[in-house]
Length: 244
Image: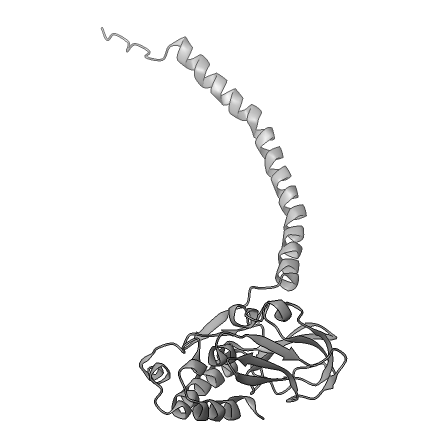
């Protein structure tokens, strides 16, 4: 006679399986409700997040990119005039202007800055300031036409700001432009190519001054060119780079 096999499943196991099954069925509505709630939140929040991202991109001012050409700073948020001054439009009727890094490196540590009076009307290329150092000077030309509405008061007590922060605290003046655009000025890649050509031109004009002549080997422009050249060479550099 064949003996029936023992049933290995106890009542306890059956009870556990049944309980788990009931639990799953009980949780299904909750899971479905949570899924619907998540979808509702996503649908409601996604457009807001998208609008916020677009608004941030449109209205948040990006940090300017500063390119380095032979050690000379060329910021992306300014435009350059051929006389080594720059312009940054900060409002429809306000353009901040100053000398570039090239100019302050040529003159060296600035001792004093003379500026025109506020209210003066200037054309592009007119001298709006003169920077002095050890009996030598460079004229600062207005990169745009307009009315000088403000001269930088910092330069009276701290002329060295031109050296330490030529594109910031060491600015020369503010001008209310006569035109909306900044025509005739270079920016971005054009400005970088121009600056590179200016450094190459400096090397040729300096006629072998040791610190300057090292530039073709990849060196950086020294921070005080006027101290390395004689008076004749200095006048040649001023005429070439700062007199229109």
